Length: 294
Length: 310
Image (cartoon, rainbow over all chains, first blue to last red; front, side, top):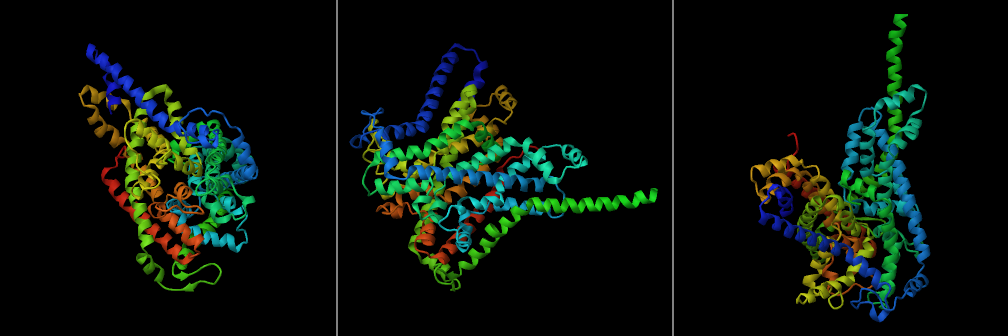
């Protein structure tokens, strides 16, 4: 509120308010930096702790002395990190690709075509967004169980082949902004419905597709619940599930090798941060336009 | 000739209409199949299961409303429900207040806003398991960064991870770290408030506070309401961070009751104790609670949410 006043009061030119302006400016910047430190600080602390010797993990030094790169070697040898990393990438890509393609197709069905009951069905799509996941969690588990796919990675991504309400909604918004004549012209030239979707609608909405892909990849990369429910075999674990195991073995009540736990946490976190920086624009667009928080 | 054309046209239009309908249905068919297998079917199934005793190994046994009766007699269930409600009641308003403050600050920053926005959002892309692991140590009463920071200004920090009264406040601190998503939604909304309104208010001599309550809040009330609903639903279902911190192979003492949130208890009932019927009843209770909350909030919103043009 005071921030608004500061900017709005710029037109006043008395000398005292000039001084007041600078004081406010400094306070404003101090607050900004304080919050930035609160958000960034824990990352630096995590990174620093992951490079410390065991006896020093929780001392207050910002820069470890000595710097123990060997912690990363230790965690790499103590747990199948490479396998988990590979699993996370494979599951993440499959989950994201499946949901992007299917949601785009479904969104096209709900925007280009006119047919009876369409709007009712779309209302149903929107309604499913309000449904808490736990209501369907147990029967969905029983479905995968009946298919004999528990303790495989299929339940982690295959459900995405059927689209997801939020993404259908998002992509449909983009399709609705495309002029219909674009498609009609291609239709007159003999293009099939599939072709106008594949060669006109998809390329024109690349941004939306990237937003959906990135969000779903992030959701998959960070998910613990599904791996907890479906995976028993350690060789199938994704990184979050693996990190939980490392925490239980090396941390809490375990061997108290916290530097190893911290190194594993960094390994789980860093790929996501890299992706975030690469796709930052899409993250921000996605959140701001849909209210999707990822 | 004319008659032929007149007859041919409606026929062609009808075929086109049928072709469109078929194609449209084909495009949405994946959703419809998924809806039946993963949403509608399971909803009915979980309602039916909630009336049975079922442990996967033996076929379900019909028990009527016994699960629901047992639910309200189960002290652990009541504890987990009150834990979750306590958490939501504190966490949601505090997080929205902080997010709004940060969004308003960012809205004044100008060109550098992008950098700070990124910084604020970074915790939200961090995997929840890593967040839980990290905060287990940030919150550690003896060696954690938070209590060390408090000690610098002469405050003896509480037992964030050990004292039953401080475990939930500690969890709230942790989830507030991920407030960045809400900040971005509110910032986008603040940027849509026309500047002329503030200029006019300035000319009329309205104070900063008056401008905030009479211009800012009403104009972003739609977004505020949206994050209120979404964050409340999310808060009632908090799981991963807390499960990571306190529920592993060995659940830690005080936390096993103070941090027992509803979804954690539900998960344990379903997949650790294999009480699938009981857990289904729990899921339906949560569903009904969330439904009621959403309806109440929608009703209330009609009174105070301002929509442009209405």
